[in-house]
Length: 102
Image (cartoon, rainbow, N blue to C red; front, side):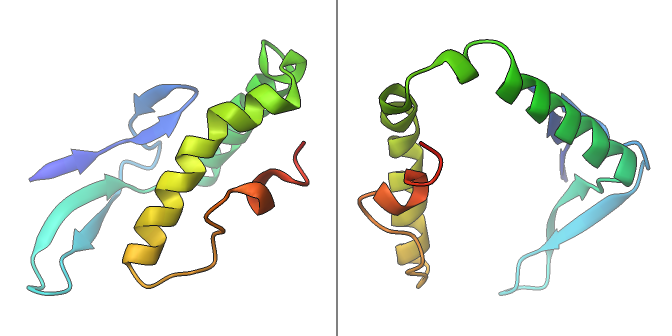
């Protein structure tokens, strides 16, 4: 069985609680993998890492146009996957996703 760790501060780490959550294939009822359960401590670490990344380093000094150019492919990929699964809440041109952020 595969196990999936949490991704915090650009690293895969074990959850502090040590607990796992099963991911079940709805077609078969089979547990296909287990993921680490995030605790409040894990969330605090992830938020702290995100704030540090957002407020220091290259990101705050990067021009809005460069941010959009770098993020647009991810937005477009999310859109393709969401529409393939019947969701239509992500715009295909990505403009809505970044208008407020830039």
